[in-house]
Length: 227
Image 1 (tube, one colour):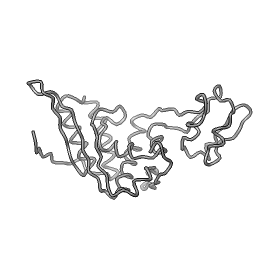
Image 2: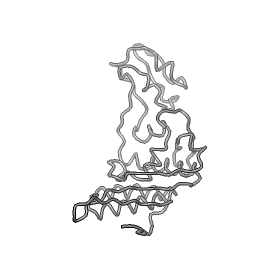
Image 3: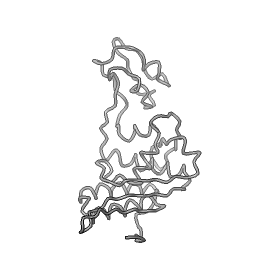
Image 4: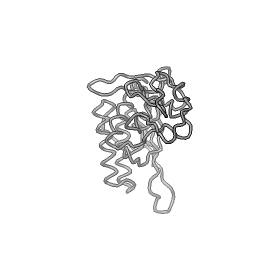
């Protein structure tokens, strides 16, 4: 996703925006999504849904998760070297009087100018909020899930509170449903005192969004097969 330009664009429906996932997903027969579940400040929980949405997004998809606007030119750092101008794939950058200018109508938000600009002349504001992040990650997770034709197995690893004798405890959860496994993970972490009520509410909001987008179902049955 970060190193390559190859992507699959999944067109949004029901007023949802397009999603940009890594192009290699289209050639895979399926995927195993392994997550070391922990608190995430934007999602509440970094688990299967976030791994699907962010981890399998293309570079443009990842940018959309964490930046709320197009790249911006810092006039005091732009030395008019024109590197960004020559690398822009759609000709969205023009030379102004003393610095380059990005045309927002033509920019496709690919991030190439940020990569090649010297001295930090062009950058993103990584200013995403949970309200911005939530629908983007849910849409991308659903797009990745659909691109893989739902042939996905999710594994969430949880470090739990130590046993009374001080021995470390871990739980491994397995499921085909990303929303169900993250819901079970969230509940277990909260029961163990490893997730605050506020963090649980943030995670629940993301999982509600993912369920609304058709990624899976929060209703689940937890079957304990090992202790």
